[in-house]
Length: 122
Image (tube, rainbow, N blue to C red; front, side):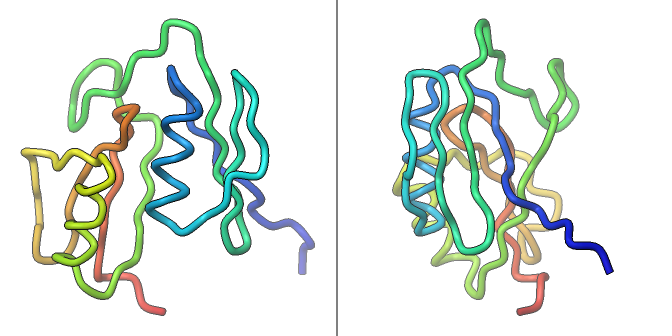
């Protein structure tokens, strides 16, 4: 068995501090490093980092240009409760909702799509 594990997911953006604050609050993480170009959020077992990219363009989901490069699926028990919290701290709900009883699509402050889903078991 390998000793390799996922350590961090990095998200490109125009403003790392705003994006890191969003993810830290949504996922109950802690901002543990901050610079003008990079912010690290510590979560249980994995980190999310936000990285400044010059001339950043947010993805245009579901089929635009630029296309999505990554999205996160977040496991929740109650879609309505989780949606309320995500919207409260700055997420934007996508107009395109393929299966809203199973998962719902949102965008973080930098435009990255992510889903809240009740389909991932504990």
